Image 1 (cartoon, rainbow, N blue to C red):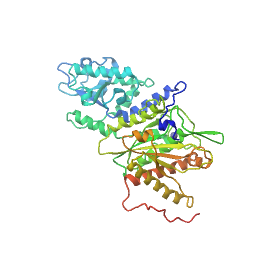
Image 2 (spheres, rainbow, N blue to C red):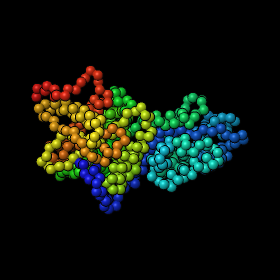
Image 3 (tube, rainbow, N blue to C red):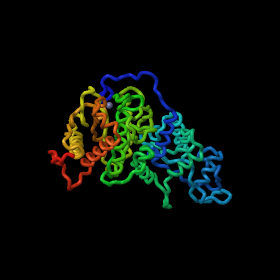
Image 4 (tube, rainbow, N blue to C red):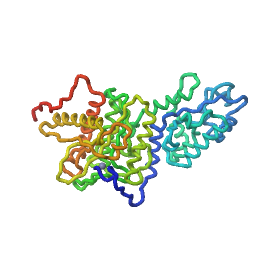
Amino acid sequence: MVSSCDIVTELDQLEGEMLVCIKFRLLLFLFLFISYNSFAQDYLEVVPQRGEGIFSLLKRYSLPSDSSYFNKFVELNKKNLTTKNDLIQDRKYKLPIMLLLFDGTTIRSSLGIDDYNQAKLIQDYNNLMLDRKLRAKSFKQDNILWVPIHLIEEQQPNKNKSEIYQEIKQNVVTDTSKKTESIEKLKKINENKAIKGLNPLFFGTKYKTIDKVSNRLLGFVYYLDPGHGGIDPGAIGYREGNELTEDEYAYDVTLRLARRLMQHGATVFMAVIDSTDGIRDDKYLKNNLNEYFGDGKPITGDAKERLQGRIDYINTIKRKIPEDYRQRLIVIHVDSRDTSQRIDVFFYHNPGDEKGKKYAENVMEMLTIKYDKAQPGRGYTGNVSERNLFMLRNSPVLSIYIELGNIQNYKDQQRFINPTNRQAIANWLCDGILHNDSPKVNITIPKKKQIKKKAK
Ligand SMILES: [Zn+2]
């Protein structure tokens, strides 16, 4: 549905209180923490001063000299300690200080955290290290944040320390070379990790494995934006006593598309992510409020802010993507019209955007071919038109906007409530994207419809 929220002329004000489920937010944070927000989890390495022991070294770096830090230090540096846990001269040691990428905006957006005080503590710590000349440049200059592990841990109250350490350990980049790492090298590691994209765990247990189909989309980044979410369900349709909400169905198709694109080697980011729902094979998708912006921030504020949050997220990621990657935004909604009106999948592009227009037309052509094959004689009547929409207008990358059908119409609903149909649409959209971004040389898509196969 393209509602006032998408066009944003008169802004709706939120009614009532925001409902935020803290538990799910924490879960989501953990998810994000172990996925792309943990781009660089290497530890700071230092050579201790002559005569220094573990406690004095920790103290010099203003780290808590409690047993957890001591134990962590021992765990990180086992090979370089004597049996009495003494340091050996001129060896390098890892401190329990994680090196994380600063994205050039705020500490909160860099680390995917909401807590201002926590961000302030991290900032103060980095400034202190600079004042003490323990670091040569400020984090704003070299884009590396020094984050003592207890400052990150505080966001994870439902985990005990050993579990957290386990997670951190799993994410550590093991550096086999003996070379002194330079900030440049760390940055490179960050970049490579940054382009990993969506954690497949978000697809749910059944779909978390990504079976590779091809590498045709290597070097492409897709920002997928399922419409609405959180407190905003979007359009609502009804069927057999069930409420069909736009955000859930758009989300499921978008997740399926995400997975399909990744099977072809693409890097995918979801502008909106659900902390509990993976890909679902149910007919009726229960509405919930667990959708968040891709960085885990809550979808709050007025209609414009709920869209701006998506654009902000995309911009934050985009800064971390190397320039030779080609990037696209695919927005997916479900329309709402009179119950009697059937509509096929159709497309919008930003007015005057010839590239977006061509891109949408190519995806539509692919759908024409797919429908003809799957349902000969049905006829597919999608269309591409221009429309001044917030997401298209503000997208920093090539963008198209897809409406999947009329959520009120009984026949159109078949396209959404049947999970096989949701998968088919996602596959076909992916094929349309492949046709745009990585066309097979020997296959040309005819302008006119192919000769139809005999109907069964
Ligand atoms: Zn919508």
